[in-house]
Every structure is written in structure tokens, then in C-alpha cells.
Length: 402
Image 1 (cartoon, one colour):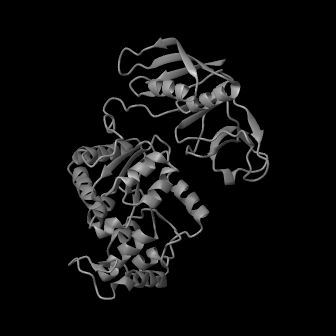
Image 2 (tube, rainbow, N blue to C red):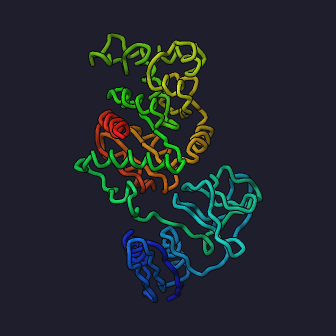
Image 3 (cartoon, rainbow, N blue to C red):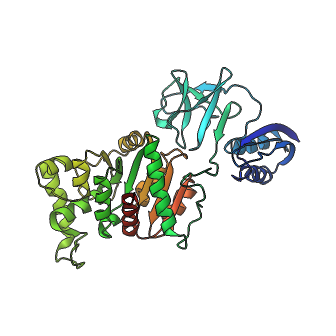
């Protein structure tokens, strides 16, 4: 058996990190021995555990240690190693792949925090500091961090004190107390503002169909929306409702399908594109109401990413998917809270670009959206299975009550 000694520090017991570390070792075919364990005496004090990890061969031990690194475990304390990128977008085989947890890299005896944290990136040294960089954006010759010593992550711990998400569970169920989740989301938004962080909304077209756009407009007017990330569908249906009072050809006043209404979203796209895009259509008084109208009037930035299924699309939609990804990532900087509302496609895309520290709430009528988010690594997301119109109405009321 080969052995490595690793150290875990932080709120490792009440945040379930120590149990998960034991499980990773055993599941990987290894063994562990607790050499030292110091337990914090209060909920504020941290704990430390030193473990001897054993496996049948070096390769098996490496696999276990890599799993433990994602839980914040550090082994032999030495600087990270790097190798140059072979070509643009081509990494050395042993490159380290990031998670969405805050990551630190040891350079010249000092731990430096990686910037632009997000999952599935390479760690690249730029101007002497580690940066999370998408594989295709790595340039030939840039130093790329390799797997092994010198990299430490800080996994999510149970929130402490009066944090809004402190006692909330990531378990997804229709039985959850929806009022508690709404109140926590509102509180998280207030806390983010107090820290100088921004609030992002990821929007799906069901918001318009369900009538949730009325409450969303209240949130925009009250200044709670700092950036909107969505696609062609949400904007097109919002504009259709503004121009023709229908959404997907259904009258939003009576709830009845309009004869020939299936062309209405195309008519709306045509009218807005004729004006030169959403902002020009608002400025020219072509579009007089709706969410997109309010975003333009409040000068709230929005990014619309294209999809292969888009009709039109609107002139504002970024149809180059790589450019759309870059625009999403740029828009998410300094975001502290993200509300993902009835949009699986764009919610999952945004989840891949978020650091785990960003407070995230995913709302959908089915459990599939929050479940997929968790399966794809956005484990910090609190899932709420409910009508998005109801959620927005309750959220607006909660924020207006203080």
C-alpha cells in the first residue's frame, strides 16, 4: 500500500465534508486512518483533521487524492507545477480541471486565489496570477497548472449565523415551504446589495405565459434587476405581448387562442427588427410596454443567446454561441445572487459559468431543472418547484414589504 497524509480544515464536520472525504477514500478502494482531529468547540470555530490515505498503487492513490482535493484536502505542501500549452486551445495531458469552488494555487510559497472562478476550466498563469480559462481560450506557451500538489479548493460549507440560506436544503421537492424559500431569496438579494454585489435573472418564456411578467416589471422598476440573461424566446414572447396582446398566439387578456395567432411572434420579431432592434424599438415608441421595454428604460443590460430552434431571431440575439458564452461570462462578473426562472437551457448554461459562492435559486414547474443543475455541478442551487408567476409575485411583495 502507498500512503499520503492529507489535511482538511474548516467547518468540516457540520458541513458534512469529513464524512464525504471518508466516503471518497473507501469508494476509491483506499483506506484511511485519522492521525489527528481537532474539533471546533463552537459553531464559529473551525475543525482540523489529518488523515493518512492508503491505496494499492500510486495511480489509485492519485485518483483518490484528486477526489479529496475537490473537498479542500491538501497533501504535501509544495508549489503547483505547470507546463506550457502545446498550441492554442491544446492543453498538456495532465492539466488540472477546475470546479466551481473557490480555488487557490501555491506559487513561491504563497497561496493565491484563482480569478474568474468557474467549472471545467484550466488554471493558467497570466501576469503572475492564476486565472480560470476556458480550454479554447488558452494560448500556445501559456503556463497551465497540472494535477497534483499546490492546488487547494474551498468547498461550500453550511452557511453560518444569520445568512439567508443558512438552514435551507438543496433537496428538491414540491413539499418544501415556498414562503420560506421566497423570503430567503429576498433576504439574499438584500444582503448581496449590502455587499456591493449584483443580482442576475435568467428568464424563460413561461414567465410571460404565466403572467409573471407583471411582477417582474415591478422588480425591474424597483431596481432589483441588475442583469438579464435569456434567449430569443423570452424576448420574442414579451414583445409579442407588448405589440399584439398575445403570447404564443394566446390572448393574454382572455386566455383564448387567437385565429392565426401562431404567426404573431414572427410578426413581433419582424416589427422590432425593422426598427433596428429592441432598444431602438423602445426609443421609437414602437414597443411601449413589457419587460424588455422596462429593461431598456432602466438601462439594465441584457444578453440574449441564440439556439438552433430560434425563430427569427431578434436582431439583439447573439447567434455565435462562443461569443454568447463570452457575453454571459462578462455579464456575470460581480454577481452575488442568481435567480433562474423557468429556463432549463439558459439556466444550465449560466450554472456552468457561476462560482459556487453565488447564491442561486432555480424555479420551475417540474423537478427536472433543479435536478439537472445539481447533476451538472451547480450544487449550490436551491430548487423550488412551483409556478414562476406565483414566485415572482411573492418575491415582489416580500421586497416591497420593507
